[in-house]
Image 1: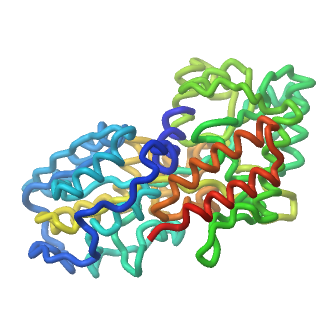
Image 2: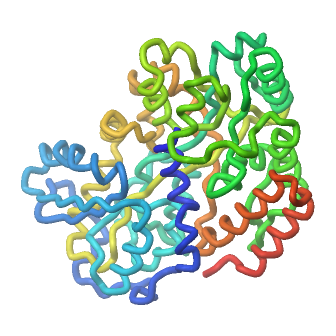
Length: 429
């Protein structure tokens, strides 16, 4: 499970060490006097040099994608610089402040607000067609559109079919009550140590339970204020915490990278929330026959009569820097990368989920039983707010949620503290 969810976490949370960093000093105005800025792009093949910064696994795999771009644009010379997630936020801040940013970059959706003043506004004729409204919210800030969604990420329920069958279940749980009962049955009838794997600490404590908050109707902000202590948040938090209190989620679970996959394959845990790359990781770790032992499903919804569950919407966007002298080729690359067929190509290279809805009609995605749940869950997924103080608030929330899970404070007290600290931090600019 580790790689894909770690990427989601990195996008939204793991940079707590640089949580106080905001939009950078040099580009502190929304305008640009760049003579190479473009308001429209033509349909001619791209020409010239282009410098792209990409992060983590995407940075390593992007050159394969660029080769396909070059088949249609042979006079384009693209250089990809790969940077690790652990230092990416700092690197962008330093580069922007020094005026040494690349032409374009992969940008975590939760970082858009941090660096928005450094990004160029989209050309007027760059199509937004086919992207979901939720994905487009990430790139619309201050009344402007400053990029396009590149890939999406979300969590679904992973479950061990064989262990659920031992516990008397022929299908995965679909509601909160079923999730709780299945967890009890897995422990009592199938001997599973940690029926539902949740992390009680660190960067996955708060966001790990977000499907419960969201599905109960909670949101992070409303009317320009943080809303972390609402009745809806309380309902989701109480349900998540109840698994720890009842011994159905292990408060001392191994939080080291890769432990989730290892325990799932070993049968120490039978259900967890994971991203799409977990499919390959589980099969690799489990070997022959593992693929038949597990499945994926939508996050259980609150009740049979309630609306569909809402999961986390992670992912990355493409952005062009406003001081780049290569804006024309950069936007042409983004336009090419945003075509549904090319998003399918990127999925085949990386297993990153497409943001273009038509891409999900591709036979490889549509016919994969493990991916069906992801396509459906993306129809009901919510991103973290594009607010420059998000990382600070999420770090505070992690600490409070850990106290709740460990029964060191009540849900009411934890949410009250969370709200108070969030109000003190504010919503940024």
